[in-house]
Length: 193
Image (cartoon, rainbow, N blue to C red; front, side, top):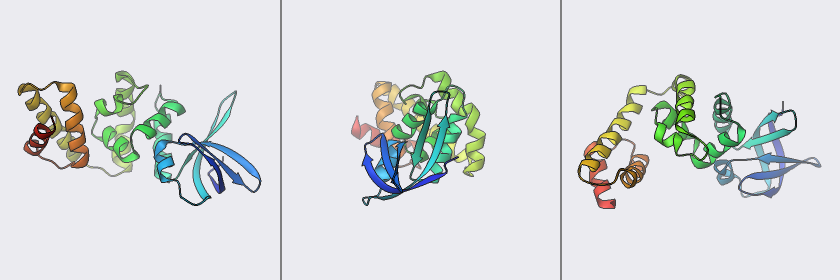
């Protein structure tokens, strides 16, 4: 119904903004990702999604159209409401969410507050094909980097490291260098553990 808002940024917090559009102030909920992309000037344009419930009409705003599309996709999954979808987009940037869904990375999705393993699996099950098709991703390359990560984690466990702490380190290495080989991941992890 309301596709976008363009006007003057009157107030902003990490969770919401108020935009003055010709004398009408719109309260718009935003993610941390959108907050980080807000312009320094007070002239602003946000792509919006209007959620209508029995007891409320809630506007969600996004600097990027692609983030709004991911938000709408997440809402299509049973068990994910607007607040969890916004939390996901605040915890991970849209590219990380797409990557996690495309590579069936349950651990990353489950790491978001409010999402259990069943919901994480449902997100992947419901959205993986859509994400692969929409973003024209290659499933093989996605799962390969995931395999390298898993192999590196297994090797580190064999070397006596605790899986939880190893996972955090390996996650960061893979995020910084998605094409890292198993050896590279292990070597860098050993330096950081």
